[in-house]
Image (tube, rainbow, N blue to C red; front, side, top):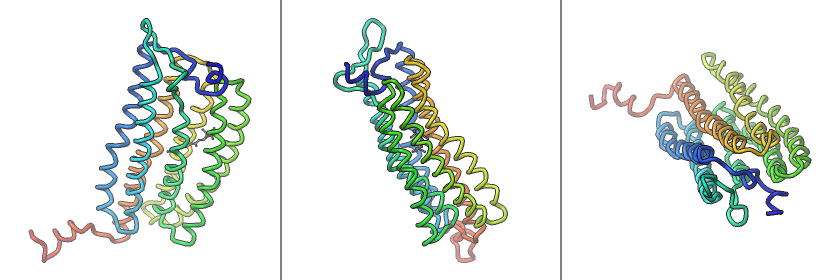
Amino acid sequence: SQVASQLGSIENVVALSAGQYTSGSLILMVSYGAHFAFILFFLAMAWQLAPRYRIVPILSAVVMASAGLSLLREFMIWEESYELVGGVYNPLAENTSFTNAFRYGNWTITVPILLTQLAIAFGLARPELHKRVVRMIVPALLMIWTGLYGQFGETGDFLRLNIWGIISTVFFVWLIVEVRGVIGRGVATSPAELKTWPKNIWWYFLATWGLYPIAYALPQLGFTGDVVVVRQLLFSIADISSKLIYGIILSRYVLRRSALEGYVPAAEALETSPLGAT
Ligand code: RET
């Protein structure tokens, strides 16, 4: 429709081949499947940690559930948004139309949690923890909401997409500065054996979060089925790395930190204790 082509998503104006359509379904399915499955991993991980770090994998489990549900919804609207006519998947622009906007809504929940996890993993205590977290969350939310507003312009003349994309990038740069500050505190508080971890997490953060603006800008390469599919792939790689693999990295870091700070998991303490069962 007229409205959909002026303000909407490229998914609603591009027909897909069977291969492209199935690839899109597959990418979204793998994404939500991975997020849901790792809820269990992160909950199990919490048992191994010193009490002060247990909230780190528990927050990962919350992120997995939230992102999993959002990605399941994306998968469902993907399936509902196309009609197979003569071997081609045509978008159904009228009723149920595909949008990536739900992702941005979901980041409002997950991004503040991901940033909070970082500060807790690095052992920051209140009131510094509180101050640093707020200073990261403010630019992060402004980045997401300006990007959410701008992405509705991806089927227009790109003026809206680019102006809000630039404004959003300014907030991203501000966020990067705040995250760098927290990384610096991480290096300072880490035991000597773990000082390389915050530095590596810094580069990992830049590489994985940096994928989102690329996905945002991608429609400018053209309204084609390949761009539609490649963008879902980029989002999916970014999601799995910035939430799931990031969660594993932080969990492994706090696991080592727990041990270096003298924490012995309960079951192990029992085994090695003279009062233990064996
Ligand atoms: C937008 C708009 C274009 C400019 C920039 C963006 C950055 C988005 C980022 C998103 C990160 C999301 C994460 C989600 C995890 O659940 C909004 C696409 C810079 C960095 C980590």
